[in-house]
Length: 173
Image 1 (cartoon, helix red, strand yellow):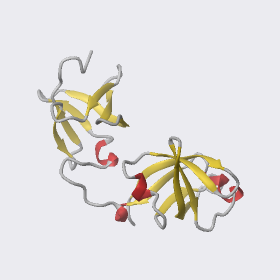
Image 2 (spheres, rainbow, N blue to C red):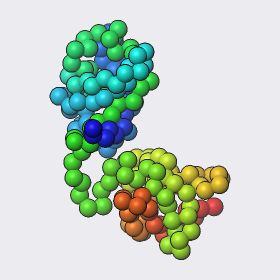
Image 3 (cartoon, rainbow, N blue to C red):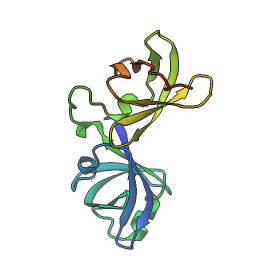
Image 4 (cartoon, rainbow, N blue to C red):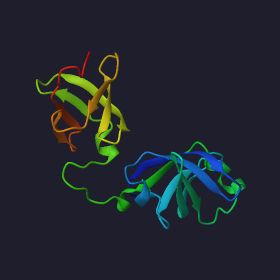
């Protein structure tokens, strides 16, 4: 059984022809939502996992609008509202050096160069210039925002899920 990774969330339906409005949680929306791509989504009513095949994809405002083969109207896709979309690991491609999938970074422990544990990465924010990693502090406290830039992120160990950072002045109040 292959592993599945979150690529978005169905937030609503769009129109009456089976289109769903999706907020993507992937850097690769064009690939993940390409026509013919298989995704998994849970049926909110039956709680069963359903494999759907993308029939169309277009961007609209900040959303990705998708239709699925065999789901030609709103009544058939209503049950996916609020559910997450997943892609199988078999569709993940090798990335270039210093490129990572969100699932490889989220949940990683962040340590300073001195070995002090700051917390775990809970979210990634795309800013355009560079991604910003949101670190949930150990023992509570305000989240730390770590820019994914060479001057700050020193080492990433995907296997151990550990990231070493250089704390530039002003990163932590």
